[in-house]
Length: 79
Picture (tube, rainbow, N blue to C red):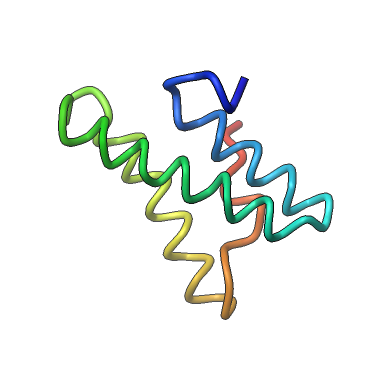
């Protein structure tokens, strides 16, 4: 689903699951796909996607401040 969906939340969630499973390189791949897709969607439909993209980028930035690498997987899980 993450590979075929337009929704970047699937890729972001998969990145979190892969981080939790101890597969950080694969997680980073999916996190980059999510980031690229959010950028594309915000540029085309800012009103519809700005809040979702802001959540994604805020989670990423919080993780970068706490760690030297990518943010912990838990910041990508939406509940």
